Length: 199
Image (tube, rainbow, N blue to C red):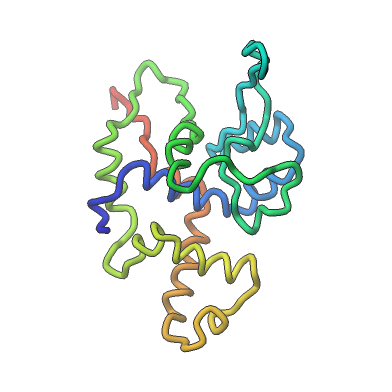
């Protein structure tokens, strides 16, 4: 699949793959889900853990609670989160959820701003990660994240990942790139940005 075949949902899923490996996000997700934790996840990392609750019998609205139940957390490095059961969402479907869960914060001058057109966002996304060395493809198919997880969370070496050492440079490149893109200022580029109507 070439970069021209990817959709905004693909890039949203990719953003989530970066975000879910951010050390502070991991720490927050493993913390008691207080309002402070929810606000930091939302305002800094754009992950929304606020969930509307309804009574199962009457259907009455009960309010908003902090919960991980609508996030996909089926990752080995998050397997020790207490009280979390395997996500109800399969990998192919949760990108829809992510588009809703990554909230953009409306700027103070919202009357003078508008959200970037999705077509423009997609065009911009296609140029964010180079494709000549197959980096984007490795990210989209999970290969690069597998390299990162093996090195970072499992303590493996390049040699244990690939005894032939043919892919040492690729593995090193993947790990370094993901380390940089774990930061929200990088992965949030995959979402529509607010533009000033009157520059």
